[in-house]
Length: 145
Image: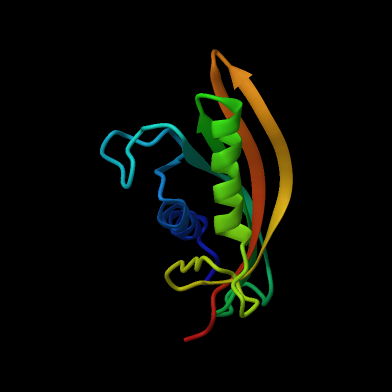
C-alpha cells in the first residue's frame, strides 16, 4: 500500500490540536466549532505540500514515503504567532526522556519513522495578522500486516 498523504495529514492535525491545546485547521482557518479552541487566536493551519515515495517496487504490499507539511501559526501579535509556532514545533519534534518523540503521530495503517524541520520562514504580517511559517518532513512507512 502506498503512503496516503491525507491519512498522515489528519493524524498530524490531530496531534497538533491535542498537544498544543489549540485548534488546527486543515488547509484553512479552524471553524468556530473546531476543538479545542475554535477559531480563537492563536491557532495553526496545516497545509499538505505533497510527498515522494520510495522503498519496494510498485505492487509490493509495503511502501515508504516522505511527506512535506507546512504549519502556519497565526496570532494577533508577533509574540502570539511565535508562541504558537514554538508549541507546534515542540509537538512535532519534542523528545521524551526515553529518546522517542513526545507526541505520537499515529496515521491508520502507517508508521512515522522520523520527523524533521525542513524549513522555517519566520514571521510575516499582513493586515495586522501575524503568521509564522514552518515546513516539516515526515518519513512514513506502511508496515506489512
